[in-house]
Image (tube, helix red, strand yellow):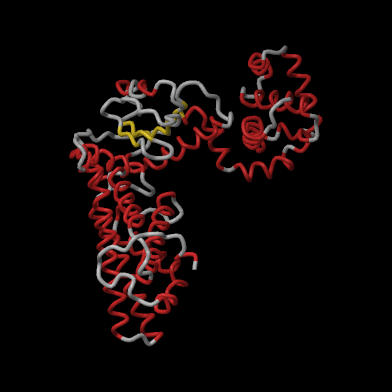
Length: 404
């Protein structure tokens, strides 16, 4: 079975390892996915630190780790010749990851114990259904808790490797605070305030989260102490306290030329929202949809960002709602889209639009006359004003093919 292949680990010295026949373990494999889901639900309900949406990035990572733990157990309990060291390294890595993210070892080990309770219940139900001897069930459950002890110890070793470095206690607390402020779901303000005091990080009234790219293996830049940094994630992020305060506008100077986007200023409990928009702004900048030049601020690109999140609907609506423009050749369409959008953005003032476009006012009036003919008078309908602004902006910034 796929869960058993390629594990390649050496047996640890716990009792009853690899002593159960394969035919005893075989009926458990079909339940791996279901039991992993049940374990995740138990963890999310009982450990607030792990109460992340199942579909979130961390939720998916947590499910993968739990499912791997279940599958690895079924391998080692029925394979006397399986090796152990790679399994140990996996859980040491999980412990180290949790330490770098600032989460507690106690929460990780509690999660492992909860998984053991769910697994023991499954084994008991399977034993009753298949009429296993009491000795078989006892050996399986004893092996389960020996396995949990082993992976828990491995995780603790990995955690200690990170946590016991010089100065790491303060780093640990700051990492935990960063994780709490940017995690999925609403953060607990009381817990944030208590942890902030422990780190010496003055509790601000608001925060903004910055997404950063471009380290490419280089050492992270030095930033002022008020900035909480997570350089370990695939897209590193920074938490800025009171970002709109005049005294805090220098906090990002140390980033130099690194591509960065500042999310909107939010309440302490909504850091994940700021981070989501910052990452989205970076993605759009990397594809040329948002102009690049210095640190990108999400509030300067609201129409583009909002439209990007509903792009499927907008893309489906454009062939119907902007059909007269879509039938033109690319050069004609580009001129008329730019003219109409600029005209609407300038309160239907042809002279102001001409100045923005750097053309003569009569040129704008001529193009507007052509547009009125194309749209059969619909351009003056006030109910279409906002829709036209949204569709034209989205087409120009997000969907229009590049000019040859």
